[in-house]
Amino acid sequence: MSEQGNGTGKTEDNTVFIGRKDTMDYVTAVVTQFKAGSDEVIIRARGKAISRAVDVAEIVRHRFIREAVVKDVRIGTEAMVSDQGESTNVSSIEIVLAR
Amino acid sequence: MSEQGNGTGKTEDNTVFIGRKDTMDYVTAVVTQFKAGSDEVIIRARGKAISRAVDVAEIVRHRFIREAVVKDVRIGTEAMVSDQGESTNVSSIEIVLAR
Image (cartoon, rainbow over all chains, first blue to last red):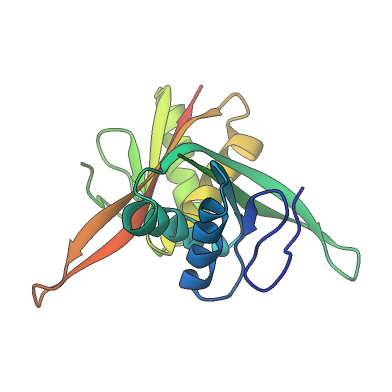
C-alpha cells in the first residue's frame, strides 16, 4: 500500500495518490515519474477524488506523455476507520499508466 | 452511445448512466437490470459523477448481486459542446458488471 507522501502526491513506488490539491499538481507528479524513467505509474484515489484521478490519467496521456496507455483500471472498496473507531466503506480506484 | 433515459438512469441497452440523483437510485436501476435477466450491465458516468459510478458498482456487487464481477473498466475523454458552442473536455468511465 502506498501512502499520501509529500505535497505532490509522489511516493517511492511510482504511485501517485490523488488528494484535494489542484488536478495539475498531480499531473505534474505523474509526468515527473515518467520523465525520471518510470515505465509505469499508478494513480490511486478514494472517494470523491476518484473523478480527479481519471482527469489526471487522461490529461497525462493526451497532453504530456502521448505514448502512455491505460494498462489497467481496478476499482475496489476500502474500510476507513475514524478517530472514533467507526468503520466506513469508501470506493477506490487504481489506474495503471504504462508506456 | 446511450442516453440519460428516464429517472432511474435506465436505458434500453443495459446501460445505466449516472447523474446527480442519490447513489441508491442508480444501485436500484442496476439491480433491476440484473433481476430482469441481464447478464451484463454497463455503468457510465462523466465528470464528477465518476466517483458515484464506482460507488454504485461496488455497492451492487458487494450487497445485492454477489455473483457480479467487474468485467472491465474503461476511462476516456469526451468533448462536450455548450449552448454557446464552446467545446470542453470531460473525463468519462464505463464500468462493465457481469455475472
